[in-house]
Image (cartoon, rainbow, N blue to C red; front, side, top):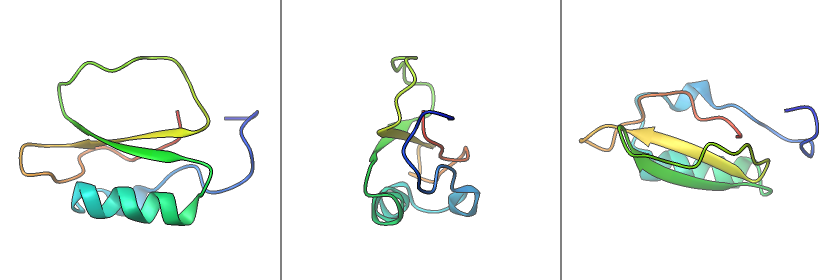
Length: 70
């Protein structure tokens, strides 16, 4: 996202990781974001925000999508 502060914005290496552990890594690597673990299929707001990363997980709490700012 062009108007977001500098810092890491995508974490493809966290796909297939534990969701809670992934959220911790994301917040450690970019202190400007809040990583929120969300179960696949849950409705979320669709507004774009530079301070939020959805961490999509399956029923086993495994990350199923590339976490990214938005």
